[in-house]
Amino acid sequence: MNALNLSLKEISDIVGGDLNGDASTLISHITPIEDATSTDLSFIMEDKFLYKAKNTKASALITYKSTGFKNEIIVKNTRLALQLLLEFITKDNIQSNVFTISETAIVSDKAILSERLKIEHFVSIGDNTTISDKTVIKNNVTIGNDVTIGKNCLIYPSVVIYDNVTIGDNVILHAGAKIGVDGFGYVQSESKWKKIPHIGTVIIENDVEIGANSCVDRGCLGKTIIKTGTKVDNLSHIAHNVTIGSNTAIAGLVGVAGSATIGNNVQIAGQVGIASVTIGNNCIIAGQAGVLKSLDDNKMVVGTPATPIKEEYKIRAYLKLLYKNSLKGRKKQ
Image 1 (cartoon, rainbow, N blue to C red):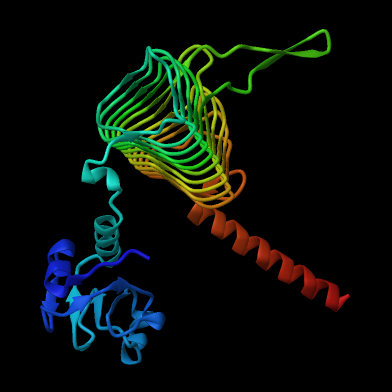
Image 2 (tube, rainbow, N blue to C red):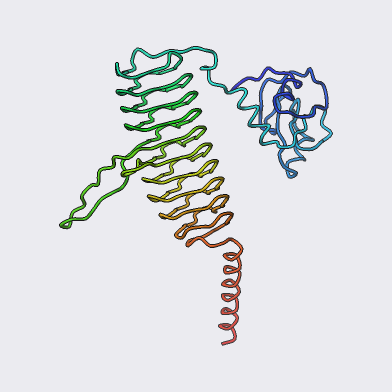
C-alpha cells in the first residue's frame, strides 16, 4: 500500500479543497471508510454513505459537503479529488531520473533510444524503432521493427507491438495488449479461406490507455486510428481500419468491427458489439447493446438492435402490459 505521509494542508492543496479542522494532522494512508484507522483518510462520495461518517475511525474525510466531522476537506468533485490524490502517490519511479536498460534486453543496433528510458528484463526491440524520453517498458515486452513510441509512455509486461506502429506520448498499454495484429481478413476460393495480408498500420495518439489483453488490429491497406485521450478497457477488440475519436471511453469486452468509425466523447459500456457503422459524437451506448446501424450525434441507445433508450423502455413497458393482459384473458377462459 502506498504511504502518503502528508499533512491535511498538503492534501487539501493537491485536491483543491476547503479544509475544516487541524491542517497539521498527518495522514498515512487512503483507506475505505469502514476499514480506516486513526491515521487514515477516507472519502464520502454519495448521500447514501453519509451515515458512515458517524462511526468511522478515520482521521479525516474528503467529501462533497460538510458532515460535521472533526477534519474534512470539501471538494466540488470527490472522484476527481480521488484521482488527483492517487495520481500523486503512484507516480512511477521513472520520475526520479533512474534510467536503466536491463542486460537481458535484446535491442537492435539500429534502434534509436533516448538516453532516459527504463527497459526491464527480456524486452525485445527491433530495427529502426524509436523510443523517446521517460518511457518505461516492463518485462517480456516485444516491440517490432519501424515502431515509434513517444514520451512518458508506460508499457506493461507481455505487451506485443507489431511492426510499423506509431504510439504517441503518455500512452499506457496494459499487460498482454497486442497492437498491430493482422485484421480478420479472408476471401473464399474453391471452398477454402485464403488470408488477405494486412499491410496497413496502427496509430495511437497521445494520452490513450489500452486495457489488459485487448487487441488493436492494423489496417488492411490504410490505418487503424485511436485518437487523443481515448480509453479502452480490458479484453476489447478494435478491428482493422477502425477510427475512434478523441476522449472516448470503451468498457471491457467490447468488439468493434472493421472500418467502423466512432466519434469524439462517446461512452460505450461493457459487452457491446459494434458493426461496420458510424457512431456520432457524444453518444452513449448501454451495456450488451448491439449497434447494427449508424448513430447520429448525441444518441443514447440500448438493446439489440440498439434503439434510443426512451423508445426501448416504452416498447418494453408495452410488451409487459400485453403479457399481463394475455394472462388475464387466459384466466377468463
